[in-house]
Image (cartoon, rainbow, N blue to C red; front, side, top):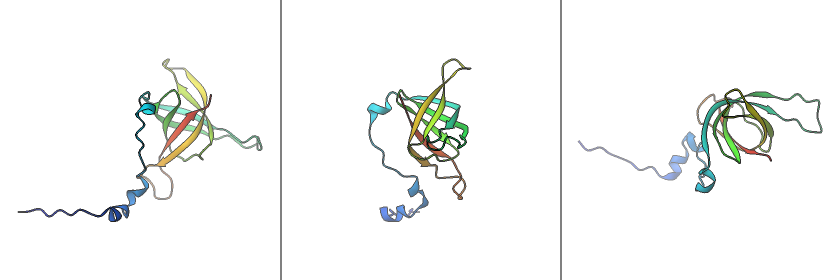
Length: 130
């Protein structure tokens, strides 16, 4: 018995819902080489604008995935705005200690599964502000 295989043109593959999941990967081993896996829940607080100090700050919990001297990758259940400044409580080697650090949202990516109503999980790239 012979199996029939078909090669779908790229255009047809783009019609699949996973196109939202695909994004360009840049080969930047230099910036990726210093990253270390860090799978821990972290606390965060969204900062407010100076113009509106009465606005309430939003706080929550995220899952850190990796960390470097320049930033960290977290998994969140909401999508923050690009350039949003957050206070993240970075875990330290001492189990009970956390260091509050300001970080700026540089990019976000929605995971391709979850609720269709916009709720779901998001990869969020944070850059530490020094």
